[in-house]
Length: 121
Image (cartoon, rainbow, N blue to C red; front, side):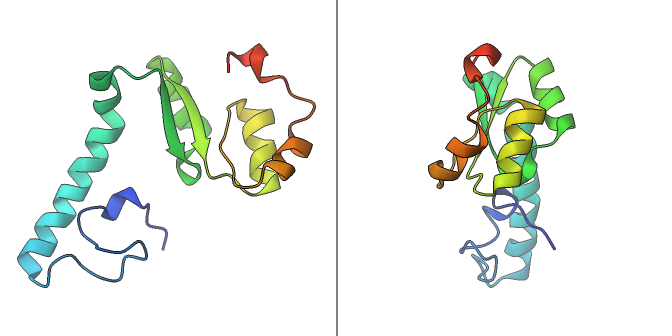
């Protein structure tokens, strides 16, 4: 089952989501609710409140719907930690968004035909 890293920010103490922050079932349940509220805040009103121009989003959350929603709200979108060649090609050619990667040698071969300045990046 896919779990986003932010979805368990308060509930779990480790990145693998195996060590709860609390042994109390009540506090665990409350922290799960707080995680949902946190994600809702991050996606809906925190970018406007902070006045950001670009939203840096984890690669698994990127979709055409998400991109359309953020663009309609006036935000540019950047994906982070895109290390797979097919994801790089999809994001650069289809979605036309910039991305951060740990493998710039792959990205340079994937995006050589693209000119991000034409898209405003």
